[in-house]
Amino acid sequence: MYKIIDDEVKIDTLIKEVADEAAGAIVTFLGVTRGIEGDKRVSYLDYDAYKEMAEDKLKEIGEETKKKFDICHISVVHRVGKLGVGEASVGIAVSSPHRAEGFEACKYIMDRIKEIAPIWKKEVWNGGEKWKGKE
Image (tube, rainbow, N blue to C red; front, side, top):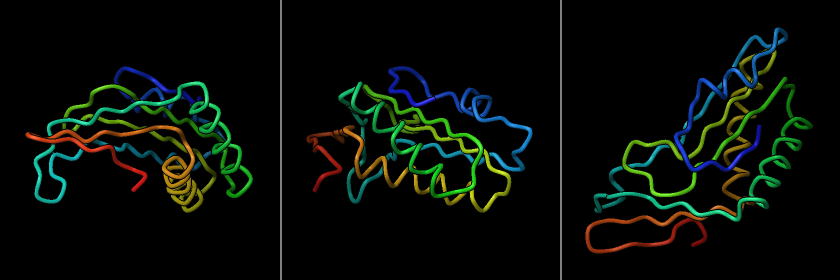
């Protein structure tokens, strides 16, 4: 599953998507809204995406990852809209025969999302805001 969503990231759903009897490991990652950024107290993040292209890029990243690592399945969702502190913006689940490949693949997927997915983040705090990610 590679989806842009506008509601809560449900890690249990992602885990079910990647379950496989050949998997000895399921590695998960949740990216959550930090309440502190430098000297600012973050109020919320606002994510926007070019949905169709972003889903295509998530799928492309999944295909790249499957070629690089010995894994069974991948499931990735990225949330858009206004997210409060502590809410998850991205969820990744990777199943693999062994844990090392799962951890490496999960990190690779997150790094590639930041590099190529058309998803933008605006950080908002008391008295200001800033688009992040392409500085």
